Length: 287
Ligand SMILES: Nc1ncnc2c1ncn2[C@@H]1O[C@H](COP(=O)(O)OP(=O)(O)OP(=O)(O)O)[C@@H](O)[C@H]1O
Ligand SMILES: CC(C)(CO)[C@@H](O)C(=O)[O-]
Ligand code: BAL
Image (tube, rainbow, N blue to C red; front, side):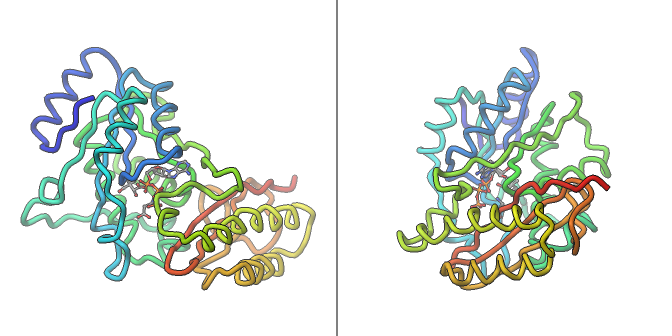
């Protein structure tokens, strides 16, 4: 596997790869875990070559967020990608991605506005802009993203449709189900921030979400169930809840009563100083 960090070499190497088949892209911020490697394995099922990227994108972090603390472990990540058969790693530095004078931003309205968009102002502008650049740099046939970041996936799909981003293959932005630890915690690079005590409490996030979904699917009042979920999380040791929302799975419009179409329960909560997110499918009642 080759690692490249300048755009000219990237273009030349991708052009060579393209001569022998299709390309699937897996964008990441590194500190790779089994969730990322599942995206790579899935990518291989959709194209001949996998191009991964590692770029800790400063423009999607707020001023008081964890940009400096975010784990960076390029050598370990390279070994993991290589052992999964990745063809090429694109690992630009900040100056290569945002040369002096960079002045453009993509803002997706609607789906990016609530949930993480409300608690992390500007976050999805940063994500949309860098993902659009990554797509233009690599020009993949398909790209894969994790459902763990459900809202991010919705924002990227909206952007790709609205800007006519060209992908030759059908179903070209592929969502991959969340990979979890044995106790249900969604894998995330940020789990590395958790102390042993926090890690033990963090398991309650997905467990309590499952219990809340059972209640909603059994017909319990939605706002009361979301209130119950929040108080369970606080009792489990979560310091604050950014949101606990039942929403339409596609539009992400909040729902205050039992869904009639597939819905999503989405939660963002802080344990100590670490912000965790998770989301799960909620069955819609036949209307
Ligand atoms: N547990 C997971 N299961 C499936 N996909 C995942 C999982 N965790 C991350 N991904 C996906 O991997 C891609 C890269 O994500 P990223 O590098 O930000 O990792 P992360 O673990 O989500 O980190 P963070 O702690 O910043 O949320 C994204 O498409 C993301 O949705
Ligand atoms: C999609 C992404 C690589 C853009 O920086 C990032 O938000 C991530 O890792 O989920
Ligand atoms: N996995 C989403 C990237 C972020 O939290 O910034």
